[in-house]
Structures are given as structure tokens and as C-alpha cells.
Image (cartoon, rainbow, N blue to C red; front, side, top):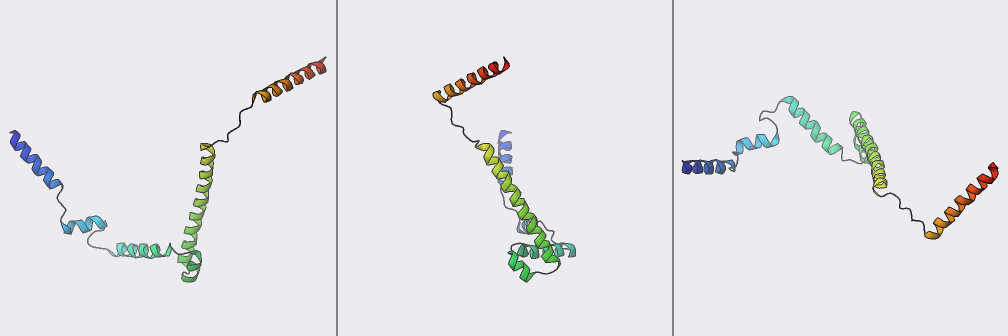
Length: 130
């Protein structure tokens, strides 16, 4: 009985590491069905077009694009720039909280001067009250 279980477990683990068949691998990896509909093809064309557009600089976009493409490009890049500025602000706030300013400790003489100033202030307040 133990021998049968051992042989079956070896067979199962060996097939677990077997490569997939080539026909099923391509459709699984691409995430697209094997039959491409018109809508999927249109979306893929838009994605390819936008992937080349979004990497343009502002000057190149002004020269090459027009109409709706230029408008979406400007909106996309303005949103990105705003987000970057917000993140810079958050980063500076985080750095301030991570490294608070260090105040130098008072020396013995400074503590004595402060105590003398307090006693003089108390004495002056008592004299004014009388």
C-alpha cells in the first residue's frame, strides 16, 4: 500500500512541473482569446497608439498631434505633473517628521542664568503687587 502511494505521489509531482502545450500557452499568456473581435482589435490599436503618444515631450506633441489626441495628451501630462508635485510635498513632510530638528541642550551656566531671571521676575511681580 505504501509503495503504491509513493509511486502515485511521484507521478503527480512529475506532471506538476511539465511544460504546458504550445497551443494553450500562447492564448493564456497574451490574455486574449484566440478569436479577436472587432472591439478587441480596436482597443488594441488605441492602446498601441497611446503607448507611442504618451512618451512624447510637450514640444513633440504640439508638432505631431492635433485635435482630440493633443487634448488627451495635455490632460494626461498635466495630471501627472500635479501628482508629482503633490508627492514631492508629501516627501518633504515625511522627511521633516523622520528627522526632527535637534535642539542643543542647555549648559549648566545657562540653566543658572535662566533660574536667576525667573527669580528676578518673581521678585519684581511681588514688589509690584505690594
